[in-house]
Structures are given as structure tokens and as C-alpha cells.
Length: 110
Image 1 (cartoon, one colour):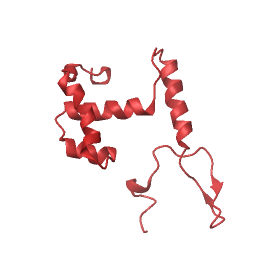
Image 2 (cartoon, rainbow, N blue to C red):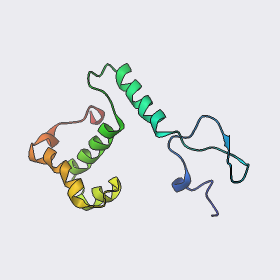
Image 3 (cartoon, rainbow, N blue to C red):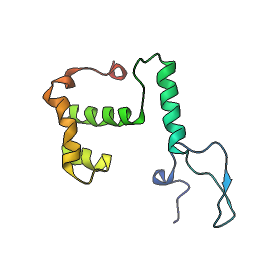
Image 4 (cartoon, rainbow, N blue to C red):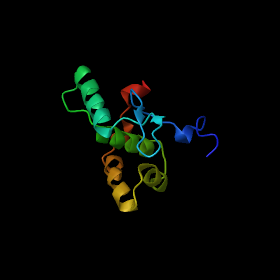
């Protein structure tokens, strides 16, 4: 596919630190980090920040979804972004709206 090197869709958010050899082509390639490495990094950052509750990638995903709801994004868009097949799975995030917690301002927004 032409343009892969400059297309954002083909870029990795978490690139590996060193290249490896692809078995199929014997070429040097740079893959993405293994998910456990990202999970470990998120946990370590939370610990370094002094969080008393464990920081997880799932917590970041949950925060992303609830902030989208708070900003007025429709549930179908959130469903698509999260990759849920069934909207009922996405509807779980509505409990935040029901409890009125969307009035809380994120520290990042201050």
C-alpha cells in the first residue's frame, strides 16, 4: 500500500524499542510493544504518581468513554470507538450519567 510510511493509520502509538527480523520476509521490522509492556508501564506510572488504587489500561478506557459521554457524544459513536459489537455493552457507561458524576472536572481539564 503506497503511503504507509506517512499515513497516520499505519503508525504505531507504542513502537517497540528495537527492531526484529520478520520470519516471513527475513527483513528488519519494528513492531508495536506487547500489551503486557504497556500495562506494566501504566501500572508503574500510577504507582510513581502515588495513586492508592492500581492504574490500569482498562481504567483509562473507562475514563475515555465516560468523558465522551460527558461531552455529549452519542452512544453509537462511543460504541464504534470502543469496538463493541453490541450497544448494550456500551450502555454500561451510562451509569455514570445516572449518578450525576459528569459534573466532576478532570484534573487534566483544569
